[in-house]
Image 1 (cartoon, rainbow, N blue to C red):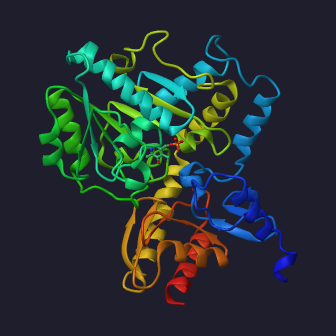
Image 2: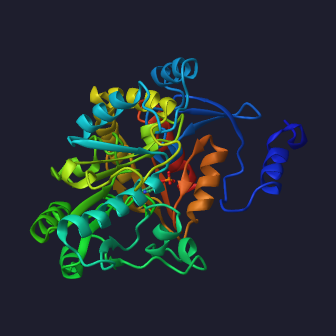
Image 3: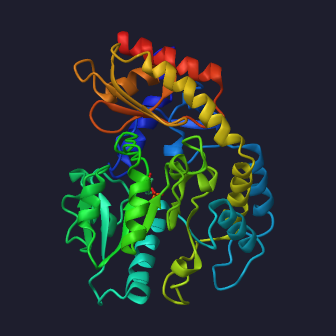
Length: 404
Ligand SMILES: *Cc1c(COP(=O)(O)O)cnc(C)c1O
């Protein structure tokens, strides 16, 4: 086909013309998808190895999730929290049970779940721990990614994400990720929470040293500080367990969830914690017009039911070992670093060969969509419905790209 018969170039130009340039997307224009596969406006098919940054853990248009959405669209879509609807309690109960917590507070985006966690931790600090008014602080990690609000970027260490968005929200202390002594030293009598990703996704799937998360748990318990685990990207089956914290049998005081919770259909996020923590909120103190809406609850309830079977966690763990073996075989053959947990991998490409962006463009040309994070690092996070043969195909294509 000659280029001007393709719809992609014009569609890419239009997308650039009519939006703020807050993203640098690959020049591909998707029009439909199913399972692990995407189809562009020219009919070319791609294997999805990003899965909407883990928002699509169950693949595109999972039949059970689409059916729940259709059924709910025909009944009731929105009430606001001023009234109770019939999908609300069931969702909150089933998610609370999945998390092993007493209570759930539903929101929409991940950033809202993080903001909710911060607000709840501060209120808990003043009302339960007895921190003097206005003095609460929260310990966070270098290299974190928790979202894009003004408060959240205030404690980002990524200058692109942070610069020129001040004045910044005070009350956060940044420590190196994976260094337990530094974290313990940063906690003082006014610390209300430690907020961490159990694996840093945006940073390139950075897995902390073994023993770090249990150590954080212990320090938080000893010092009367809440451990808030941001499992928005790492949770809900991605790593081969329901939560990334499960790998080290760590139970945080608060789970922050999002992304896959909406089944790739609607934005759904939530905070799960026990009554002694989430119970500090009273009417009028926090909320969201769309949080916990009937459509969101109907879809997310089915997501929780898919996870309750354990099938996706199992797939992720088993297929993740295949992915790990394949990627480790490429060490020294274009890759200089590989980190894998479940179907989630960070790959460091030899920077002398190409940037992460170049690698992703070359993968795209060969029908694989993935995304670079920083420099020469790319992240693979395929939908958990991907098959062995499709993983092998992604690995073969990656090997071609690295040696071409
Ligand atoms: C994506 C993400 C967020 C923010 O979620 P949004 O829905 O984009 O607001 C927060 N924390 C982590 C770990 C994430 O990966």
